[in-house]
Amino acid sequence: MKYMLMIFDNPDSREFFFSDAGAPLMAEMDALLAELTESGELVSTEALADPAQTRSIRARDGVPVVTDGPLAEAKEYFGGYLIVECESIERATEIAARWPNAKAGGAMEVRPILDPAGTEM
Image 1 (tube, rainbow, N blue to C red):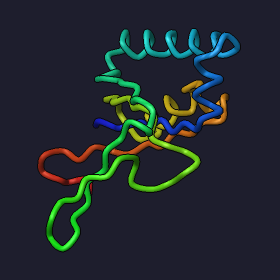
Image 2: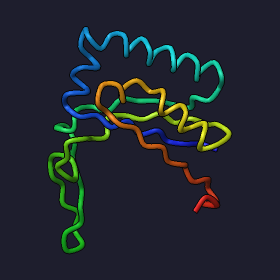
Image 3: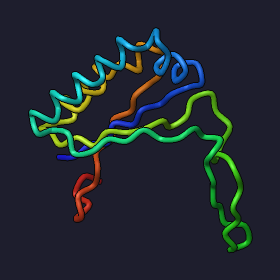
């Protein structure tokens, strides 16, 4: 089964992660990605740009309206993701718990990806 591991950052965690002080966390992340690649569990992963570069679209009176910025003001924001394919949500959760950004003040969320038949609902 496939799972999306959503990486939530905040301005402090992202700044720390990409600073010299965060270099050990980057090395830890690289090692975990290499392990998941070798095991065949990693499907894909991407980091997302700063939320200031976001555009949101919402319908108003049936017409799509585009605004700059994320949908909601929040202290945490969706900063990236991993898609993994593994045997269970427990394994996906184990992987998420090992993701180093939680040590820098971020958070992770694990969600199953629906198969085309939607049987997970």
